Length: 116
Image 1 (spheres, helix red, strand yellow):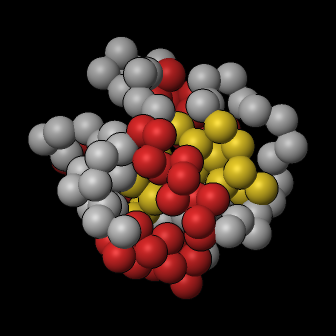
Image 2 (image 1 turned 60 degrees about the vertical axis):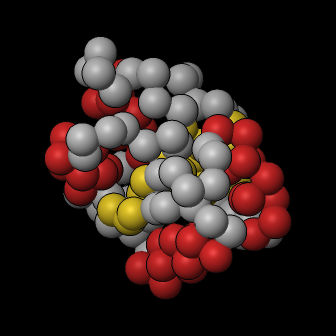
């Protein structure tokens, strides 16, 4: 799983909560860092948790980039953001911040098996 969130404390909280629940997650600070991480991964993640408001490359730009890439276009993306009220095209779900950790884990369980 890939957690794309520019707020370090929140990114680390998500990763820690996911790890405690048996998931493997790595973080990226912005969309460009996430694209670089995806390019370096031998296996694509089961899910991308995506913030929308980030520096360097925001969530909308990241979505445009992965949807333009046939190798990444099918990645399931769940937006976790205070800025989004509608579901952007190609996104499976939107969760409004602040998000309850049990709700986050319920959504993650729809896309990922523990250990992934």
